Image 1 (tube, rainbow, N blue to C red):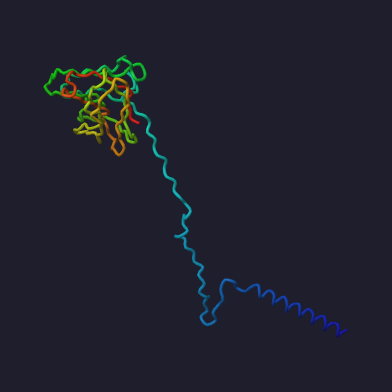
Image 2 (image 1 turned 135 degrees about the horizontal axis):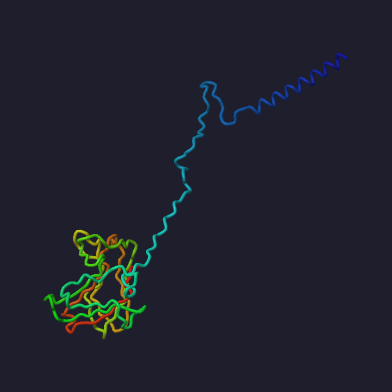
Length: 238
């Protein structure tokens, strides 16, 4: 009896020792060991570089380019889409006549602009021209105009009555004064044909934030000794 009890106690003691040993092994610290001399953990670097990782995969999307809606100077006579008025006569201003609602074979729509330039030299300048302005007769002495930022070109169609008519310059902007145009651009001289042809003024890189002189043209007696008749249509910023 005593012998059986002793054997049972030995078995229980052995199981307890095995259990303690097993539990002690699982409680060891896995991330560092204590240095008994310094009471400090070994130099294991667990720092995190937030600055390097911050938004490292984020790519900012570029804002979509602003599209410029077509802005007409002239589409048709009396059209509500017309934004400038042919009011700024220059040079021999009495020698130039404008019919903004001509039915003489327009390029599109029902009408076009007919311009007649005579050789009368009425003011002694020997040249003549006209500006399409906003508001009418605005030579930079009052506010007006439009912000045309985003436009890359001005296009228009033109033809001569017979062909061979020479226009020294087509342009936009260039009005000076207290309220000056923000820039100027043009083409010329242009030799017209008897058939409609499209022309373009390049506006890339131009400051179009304030344009009161939306369109202009000029010619002179020397290159048109017999005067000239020519036509314009579909003038627009794009």
